[in-house]
Image (cartoon, rainbow over all chains, first blue to last red; front, side):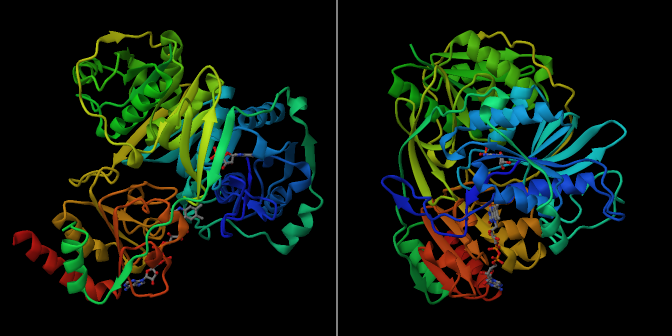
Length: 268
Length: 323
Ligand SMILES: Cc1cc2nc3c(=O)[nH]c(=O)nc-3n(C[C@H](O)[C@H](O)[C@H](O)COP(=O)(O)OP(=O)(O)OC[C@H]3O[C@@H](n4cnc5c(N)ncnc54)[C@H](O)[C@@H]3O)c2cc1C
Ligand SMILES: Nc1ncnc2c1ncn2[C@@H]1O[C@H](COP(=O)(O)O)[C@@H](O)[C@H]1O
């Protein structure tokens, strides 16, 4: 599974010289990747006996010195990490996807679980790109996943524009996780009883998990180790704050609201 | 000469409305690059639909049809094979379309195979391969340029007017390549049935949040929605709780809407929600908490409980409509 570091989404965005100023940024794991690791854990574990049936490797493309977000996921329960040491802010999504594809191949993995979206750059593209580069099937925008162990396939409810599509993809394949994959009964692995209900949302790391995380292995690779020349074909000319909306007004009653909508805004 | 290829989706008869903003974005890019706009119709048995697209033209120099049994139902695996084959066969210098769930699946995969950069969910075309888009839940605006022999884009529907029909364009078959589902199988599709306009196309959106309490309590919102001929929307909290279907979610992760009139009822106004609706022309917020952040973007705010306001609002709107 993959995780990206992003600037804390609860902090305000700072700008300097026509760019986002990250000099004082607190980096945190992308929320959708928290959903991805929760999905991977629910797929890999027997929730009752806590036994594991699959190994979970966390992969991130980021400066090796800034890999705390990987440690967070190791503390939640992932088994080991791979960091591709590169400044992700200087790479485009194609470069990131090539690096992740390289790690996937090197590991001989069966399933790639990605988030659907980076909360900061909002590409919504890396998982789809990796699947393309690896020539694998993909179920994107997963809101529910059932592992069909007998057929070695994932049956995925995909959140599409006008409803839900159920798509079956054989392993090896790629999933990208949407919000509702972390609802209590969204993931079934054929091992944990189907009626088991998880707590909503990604799990918190336990104290024991945090201690154990320090001992888990994190392999460090360079883009060159994966035969990837990492660059970017995207050039930002300027990144600026959006124009603010003009201040509105508080109305005192429904009468006043309807009156203003009709005569002032002219929308009724 | 540059050639902008826009993938359009059809409903069996003609182009889907959802595809029209992407055609406009493609036409703008073609204008900026001094090139031609071309449209690509993909599917199985889509000949008639392609002819209808050709008849409407939309300013395109050509409409291309890739018809193959493997292309229905939609899978990104098979569609991407075809889209990439067609882009190569036609010598496209740009490839894109509206940022629907279909093309948000296909275009990035195609971009990977073409080794091309992608401008995702653009809000504007600024120049030759230069675009604008939002980031960080609408809190930053980027103006950027892509380089490469092919570039890709998806266009945010709320930021481009639907393309208008024009003179007819010639329709011809294009080699669909060898589309392959790679073992993927669509087991079922559950479409949310609604007689209302699509959320992204409606001129009025009435949205409810967690404070509505339950799905049944959405009834007055639905009444208001139908009185105004609008679409129903919701916050993540309301969709996660199962009050309404997930595809009604408005926000960073849901639909981005920009109607003439947006009602946010019992919605706090988290940045992820604002990202999906702050482009609306007039925003009305009804919330019992005067400190709710939604009031910072609302043109008209009413600090009140929905239980105490919606019945009267419905009656007054009814009266306005019939007067
Ligand atoms: C990665 C990520 C992506 C997200 N994407 C989205 C997204 O796309 N869209 C989205 O909406 N959210 C999204 N969210 C969630 C978002 O952060 C908020 O949690 C969510 O929008 C809150 O929904 P809400 O306003 O309905 O609920 P709350 O924040 O709980 O607000 C409920 C509001 O109802 C009011 N209220 C309660 N009772 C009444 C009453 N009787 N009458 C009137 N008012 C009442 C309360 O005062 C309160 O303001 C995302 C979050 C994350 C982490
Ligand atoms: N630098 C990165 N390292 C690891 N995974 C990433 C990186 N960038 C993006 N991803 C993954 O790709 C998903 C989609 O990101 P994006 O296409 O950028 O919106 C994220 O949720 C991550 O799982």
